Amino acid sequence: MNDIPNFDPHNMLPWIAMMARMHAPAHIAAALTGTPLDLVLEIYESVDISPRIQLQQGNTNPDWFIGNATRSYHGAGIASFFSQVKDKYPGAVACAIAHAYNYYSRLVCGSRDDDGINVLDDDGNDANSVIPFSKAVDLLEYIFDIGQNPDTPALSVSKCSTCGALFISNYVTTNADKSCRLCRQGVSVQRVKE
Image 1 (cartoon, one colour):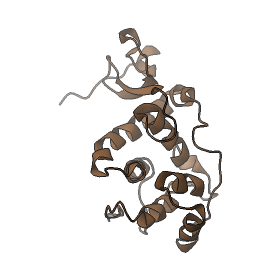
Image 2 (image 1 turned 180 degrees about the vertical axis):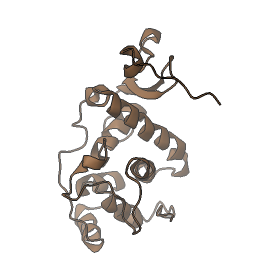
Image 3 (image 1 turned 135 degrees about the vertical axis):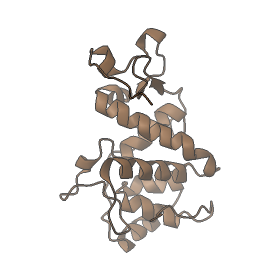
Image 4 (image 1 turned 30 degrees about the vertical axis):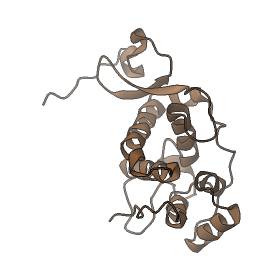
């Protein structure tokens, strides 16, 4: 099933419904799409999703993404997906973010048989996804310099010089730091020979 809406830069409503099903906080969907919060809340209600109100975007410290190996690898996946789809949505970064996060959530959580995307556990927590939607937005802003934080990018995607894995690193990373956390810790990771 393809649940990616058709792209129409003048109609963000299907994209907002998609973000609702991915449990993006309503205020973030409103900010990303430029849609009034009242309308976003109506859309969330129409797809039977309770809007979650969280901290505003930009509150995730960049160090959170490189703080452990799992978040670093998952973040690299989200950034890689975003870089692959961003050119499909000229002038509509919200669509590219939603598309990339859809890929990520399907990768880490699988899919359900209905129109929803299973990124929350039965209690409504983000436990199934290492990086929830709101933090993914922050991550992409730190890497791609998009959105409301026009500062120099704080993070980048690096390729481990030892095992070849992609991981999130500080924007200013020396060649000596181009090893992923597991390789730096001496964990033996052998690449699959093709």
